[in-house]
Length: 461
Image (cartoon, rainbow, N blue to C red; front, side, top):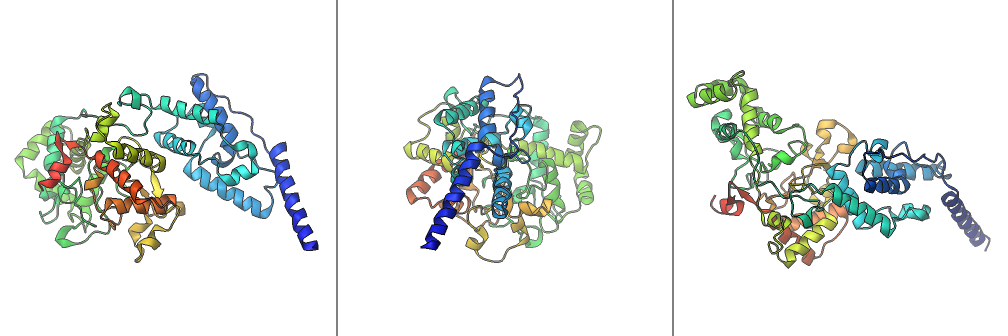
């Protein structure tokens, strides 16, 4: 009986302590950050909401610490919450003031958690009863996000969408595009004149080789799946681990890689210089530099910037054709927005952030087999432990053609890829019906290259 009374007293004491913390405030209250006069009225309201409701976990250095924060266990839990929260979404004083704008990534993540009532989390609300977003506060945030996106090319009724249609054309130097196209398909860029850039990025195979890993010079197998070159201009960086800052930097890598194209750049330039069409083209287009590694990779990068695939059925839908998608495809898009949009957003539906593979469940344990160096992902570039197993989010344009999936090419079926993403990234087990609808939506992302459907190109390979 004494033990029961002791437990009840302990529980009541803890409850009163947490209640007192919640009612009387916290240590180190922050003074409100004023919003710049140039900011919209909508953002003044949004900033106030965020400062009141999000600062504790998403603004390192500004956290309002509760009076129980010095307890050993409590301190560890709070520090973990702040670390996880700020890693996913960080609000700095400059963001609160409007001096720095929200990025598309931040807008997508904020929209998803507000729309799905995911924030604040239950454990936070248990200690902060006034932390919940009201209906009016949610609507204020979502209305502001919609206005932030109002410059999209979409039809007026879709300007608030987290995904934008691809432009129907891009302004590029046509002569450089043509030169880059020729170089992209030229086997003289490889050490034994057998491979070109198109060997691993075939334009009739969704911009990939549709193989688990690529085959390089002398039949050597690479360690990683080849990502699509279509719409690669929308990536924040290139390669799965983001080690190349742009398309030109990326174009230089495979040529000199001993298990890819296995060439020496000095020798490649000598070979290309023996082709009169190349020497004339480079003299005209790069008169000050001529034919060099820098100008060759620049021409290839300009060509790759032209590899956009607009006019998918989904693009037509975004531009106002409500009949472009059927009922299941629209339902699939809604499911996709509810679950996937915080990573797969923007014109290419991805490519704009790095994410850990296996947020909710260990992907590599599920996959089986030994871990490889490429499984480390972004860590191989930064050597920062937080980046281990993080990869650049793949773009989903033309995804039905860019199989097999993931950095390791371990999955051949799109439905299986959706299922695995649900389990490992979201901790959700999607029903077969929901998977079918999301796959139906994803297949509407297949676009055109030079006016020809990529599905048609793939069928005639």
